[in-house]
Image 1 (tube, rainbow, N blue to C red):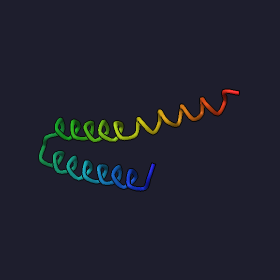
Image 2: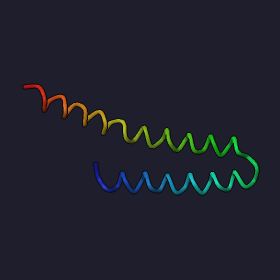
Image 3: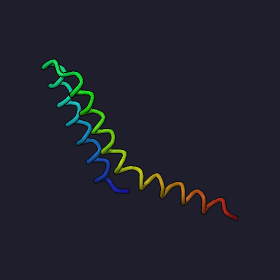
Image 4: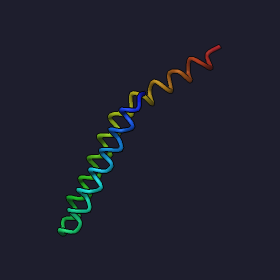
Length: 64
């Protein structure tokens, strides 16, 4: 895991928050919710392989 992943997650968070605020002020709360949900799913797809690798490392560590 590198710093680039952290920067990508931060960029998605900033972009999603700006888009959400614009949509809320224009009266489209349901679209704002879907935008937030899409950002969350995107970030989860990026993080899941690292979490799987962490669990496999912990599993190998305790297999004595």
